[in-house]
Length: 190
Image (tube, rainbow, N blue to C red; front, side, top):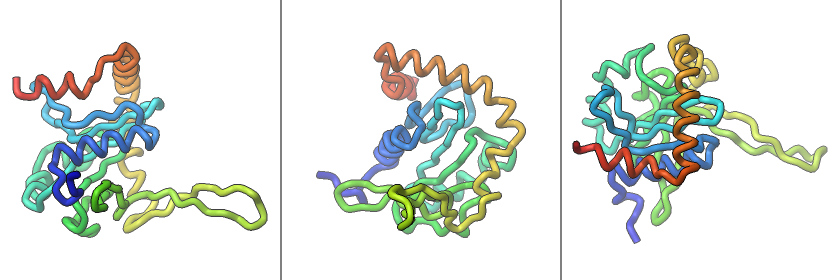
């Protein structure tokens, strides 16, 4: 069995795409490539409401520092209602993460687990007066305004209708048994 510390960039991306499917982003894809588009996210998850989460996997500090120079990393550019850097544990500090981005770390020994270092984490709380628990947001190393920074971006809201159409096309392809990850990865070196 492969140890979590030995996971490659692509293995972490695949793990995050699978995990996003359980986090209400049923249309989640890893290692997306295209000759026609500049930004090529490591992971993109889309909810059925059209909300998107872009995840960039970084396995080295030099890769993270080079990523900051890309034009779609500038404020108001790039895709994703929410954006997150995903790293092995301890690679980056929350203070290094740009405004509006989250930081998730991959922890574990034999089985990978996501640990939220910066961003919104849902916490279950129980009340002794009622027989149920509720989930409440807890903001780690950021405030509510920073977490919602990209969701408030006007450009993103304009693009939402196009994203919903794309989601519908992808949903229909998945219903027909087309594995979109395999399709995208097959043509990445063409």
